[in-house]
Length: 413
Image 1: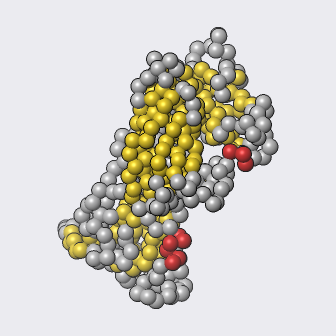
Image 2: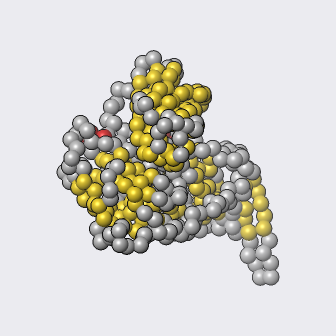
Image 3: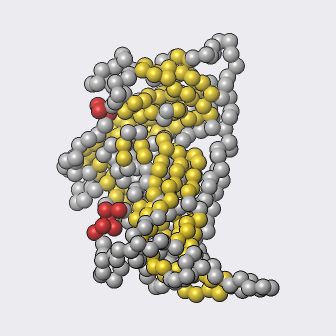
């Protein structure tokens, strides 16, 4: 007997050259950021997952294996399973819900007859905001039906096909698609989706890993000043193995270790020094910028992690989801449009967006509401006389609150 749910076996799409291959799987996802829990930086929880395309209703597919034959039978799954819908149910939200038919979960010392295939997945490198999907088979290897009571994720960046209430016959399996949305900032991600089964204490989970990275990657992926070190070393490398040049770091000539740009040929990997001792807590930049001539990564921005760069406010009526917008290479005098998500705006609205720099203009083009999220479409236009590194702020203004957002770009002629 083998059971299967249709409509969830979707691929990841093309991967970047030179990146490690992805491994399939999922039933558990949650994110780790540099020194912070959740999907974003400190007090920056709330990555948004994209909706999935509607598919067929999940079905349970059983196959019998007899000498000389391999017939397959398909039956519909319970109507409680949404048609191709991806859901996101955090552990906190799950704790507020009733499990089963308004009954408490019975204690059990029985061994859970469930196998997850695969048990671990590594998506490898993801682009910022990239959406990746994998399917895990929830297989009943016992001799009795097993009912899925609940599935929970440890991060809002993770959605999954709703399998609540599905009964898996002996020898059958149900595929559950999990979807992970890469955050905007570089760094590793570790998320989880945990399954709860009726009559069993054991709640299996699969660790899912990935790393958001640009075409040029830094190791470590940020500058951590929390322990008191205001200087250190970094490895800067291209993921496609292409040789490139580091043009500047923090607007200054790079400080290479073991490399002389006047004598040596360009490499695909460098060791450089970073030093922020010239700053104070009041002047410390939030981002340490590496400028390169790699065609796919003109600017690499590294978060400077310090108490002075963390937004720890809890009394804001609303906040912008991302810490910064990095636009890569843009043309002098030419407008560039991008979208920003504002969270928990409630009854207020964004009235005005303005530039805080003479190097570019900013304007608000459109405001679209979707539940607790508000999508703002912004247009910036670099000054026709400006070229070089654009590193400034735009201000979002509403009735009860205003917030600044860093804008990073390389402006060329």
